[in-house]
Length: 196
Image (cartoon, rainbow, N blue to C red; front, side):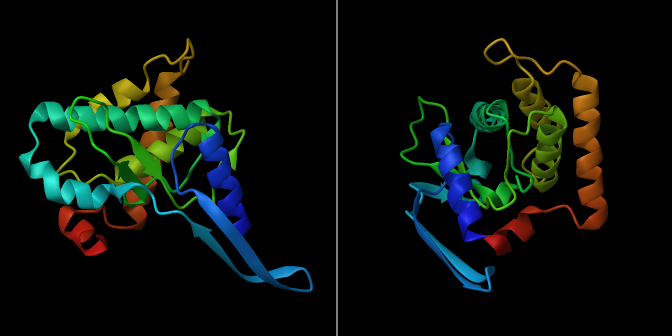
């Protein structure tokens, strides 16, 4: 597990996607099988996105909310354009980087990388990642309008690359979100407060 996190974090950073910066890792093995391992990182220069939202969201004007959701969409599009897939793309695995400049776009980092896939060229991987993310966004904060803004921003062409079959992409995303909702309760702000 630790070696996977080490490799995954290094790959993200090589692609300009922020995450924790690896310092070292180690493992205890028995007959070549890992028994336990550890992974040490530098502290992320930022805050848990959940903590940031709990503190600030209610005071945000609509343009600030839109700025945040646009930044998240561009962050995930950059990740997926690099052919990387993070199945655990939940709100609680995101950090907002500091310093926060009101004149500049928000910057993000992501953690919990042990299931990351590289060379995930098929867009269905990206759609499934976003299905997990949208599942994790509490509706009290992220209404239909903001979710549509997220998806429209994400689907914009990047470096001339477009998602050709957007209907299939959105169908896959919605299917993944519905599967997660069927398995567990959709997060609410009250539930996120307990996680913070």
